[in-house]
Length: 191
Image (cartoon, rainbow, N blue to C red):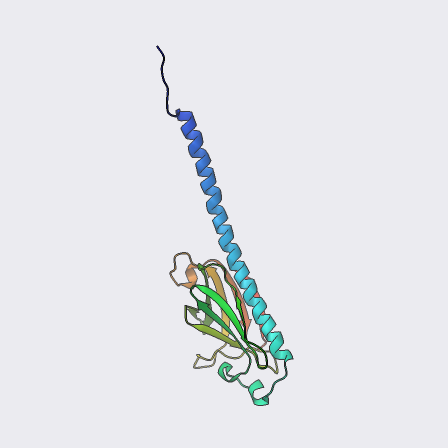
């Protein structure tokens, strides 16, 4: 009598489940690495854009001397705008006598950017912008224009928010750009 054995043995099933579990574990771990890389890349591009704009603002001649001494970004002739459109972040440099330059700084819709003024954090959402201006005589940052007491932007947070909660405290892989208003110094912080 011939027995026709079809199907899998218990050992074969255990080996297959173990292999699938290992592959899923490696895939999930690599997903976190990719998200962390995108956050770091966005922070790097943001810092580079701020530093490049600061150098341009300090090196270009000023057509109106009173604008160079102004303490308000809206009256400045040179400023940087960080905006969000369809989930992606862009930095636009406004400089007199030059074409406006826009650079995409995020590659993933999960990357979020927020800023802190007076201890209060605000996420840059679609259709909103953050403006950063420099005193062209000293290189210091200008106070934040929407702050009634003219406080400085304290930090810009870059992180991954897969839950779309909008809360800075929920950002994974948080990285921060600390702005020292009166000196114009930019610090890179990873928490």
